[in-house]
Image (cartoon, rainbow over all chains, first blue to last red; front, side):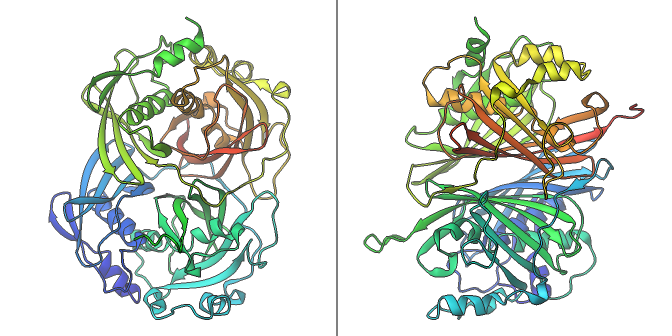
Length: 292
Length: 285
């Protein structure tokens, strides 16, 4: 995993093989499969490279198909679905070992103006007064294996709380809530797209905590298999990924072995800059039936 | 044929060969094919290529070009994944040799797990709602008659939005709520209910993003850009469901709307998302 912003940028800087065909490198990692945020961000970079820079990305929809192999590069194959006057659309298929592992569609728009509104940010503690997540987990799970924690050093994370740990006020309408502050831990260049790509990388972190919160469980508790099924982002307004943003997560539903999370992304000033949705597989390990 | 029988016919595709289907068109007075029809026909095409032991749990889609009512729509299905627990399909809707719509859908072999859901908001009854097409007509929407004809299988009772009828929310600037059902009983096949619901789900969702603004639909160019559904639990599309919508953001001539679908007993059965173009028309009054 990339240690800092420079390593993250290197990971997101793809090698061009041919028109519409790119290759993404890997960083050494102890994870058994490629982090979903990496595949999503690399695929977004691949798609964006094939679009006239006058068009900015405003949404992406994606499905995770197979676990990615951290030992092999990932090939990104871009298909043009539309090159319109106002909108351009790309589909990116990520492949390894001859098989698709991830499929993303992204939409790009020539900048225009219109009506403006956005949700109000919830009242939360500031990043400075929020909690160090590694300390929180150390208290919850004293025996947890922390050897790979430093792999995530590119992300600066401050934990606000969830509806399952008493740190957030209970909301009878929304049983599954979790909030945290996130930013890239070191400075990024000013190019706005690098912030979009870095945010996409980080956006796959922490989401399923809100889906497990009502069940007294956490993704880190070691008793669950949690795997992202899909991932969607709507980019509303430009923002810096290396300055604090609040990840305000709600899980409207869990059932059938799945959990859905929708999340608002707010700057510290309270502006909603993105909305994220993800469904994931949430399986409790059955000790009597160990499975790969 | 009744309006509902006509809808059921519309959602029953002709198979041309394996993984290739053709969808009929309704008798419509509108210029562009209604997005819910394309989404529902694509869903049916995808379902037809998957072992019925797997149930669809989500679809993500983009609208690429306006559909043409004068010719049928071809649905071309690609098998992206045939896994043990999950199967994935990509459906491209084509007309005149060009893609007009692109949908990816995911299927899962049923399993058990944690269960929770958002609580249903307190709302009025369907009888307290206003007929949506009548509201459009009285609001001066010039498309109301054509939409009323096209959506004649749908019973939509509008409860209100942020500017009319709904109380202010402490976080949401733009909300809308309505009850919806298919007007007459549908056949028992669950696929028909999924498809009919998908058909109906494109009605009004984008409108929630205008609920915070003094923007009449007649003075706004509106077009769905994407459409996403997470199907949580099976349900009947011909019994009342609450379509609870809010728009977290509008910017850049786009509006994003999210929707939650509850049954009368409070069960959450689906969550939706749609982004659309909401472009103020030049010289609008």
